[in-house]
Image 1: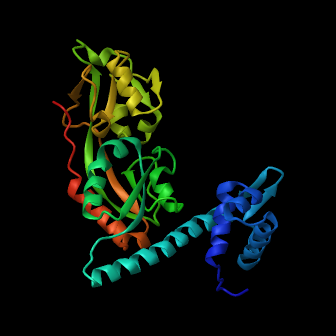
Image 2: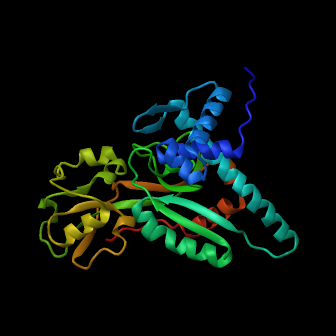
Image 3: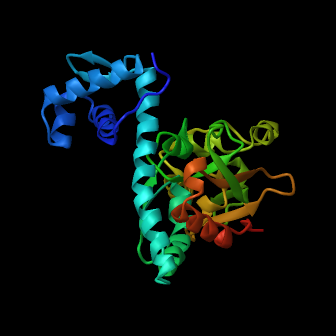
Length: 303
C-alpha cells in the first residue's frame, strides 16, 4: 500500500457529516445526495486508508477509534482550506491598503470566561476588524473541555484552564493569559460563614488546587450541588451556604453576598488560550490572541 493517500475535500465533508449526523441517511440529507452515494464514498475512503472508520448498525453509524481520529483531522483540514481563501484575500486587501481581516472565528470557552472575559475582547476585535464574525460555544471544563473542541476541529481557539485534571493535549499550542485567585463567598453579614454548608458545582472540581483544598480542615464535603457557578452564586445569595470560587465566577456577584480573601496561600486558577499550530499562524487567530493579551489582567479578589 502506498504511504501517500489523497482524500478530496468532499470525501472529508462526507466523513464529518456521517460522524456528526450519526448515520448515512442523515448525512446524505445534509450533503444533498443519496444514502447509497454516501455509503459508497465511505467504503472508498476506508479502502484508501486501509482501516474501518465506522461501525454500521441498525441505529446508524458510529466512528471507530480510527474513524474518530480521521474525522477530527478532517474537520481541521476543511477549516484550513476555508482559511486558505480568507488568508489569500486578506493578503490582497493588504496589498491594496484596504486593511482588515475577514472571516468566521470559532471560539470555545467555559461559562465564566464566555460571560466576563470574552465580551470586551470581542468588542475590541470587531471594532478593529469589522469583517471578523466571531462565534462562541460554551463548553464545560470537564473531560476534554474547550481544548478538546479545538483538537476535534470544532473550534479555532479555546479559552482553557491550565494545570488542572484536564490536561491540554500535547498537539495543541497556547499560553497562559492570567492567574486568578479563589475567594470565599458567603451571605452578606453572616457572623460565621465558615460554619455554613458548602455549595459547589462539578466543573469546579477540575479547577481548584487540590493540595490546598485537602489541607483545609474547615471546608466540609459539599452538601449542595449546583449545575454551574451562576447557580452557586444564586444559592449563596439566598443564604443556602458558602462557596469557594475563582475571581471570574465572582464577577457581578449579587449584593446579598460578601467576598472574603482566603489569605496569602489561597489557591489560584490559570486561564489561557489553546489552538493548533496551523491555526496559530493565521491572521484571524493572531488578531484574537493580540486582543486577549491586551485585555487579560490579573484578577484581584475582594479583601
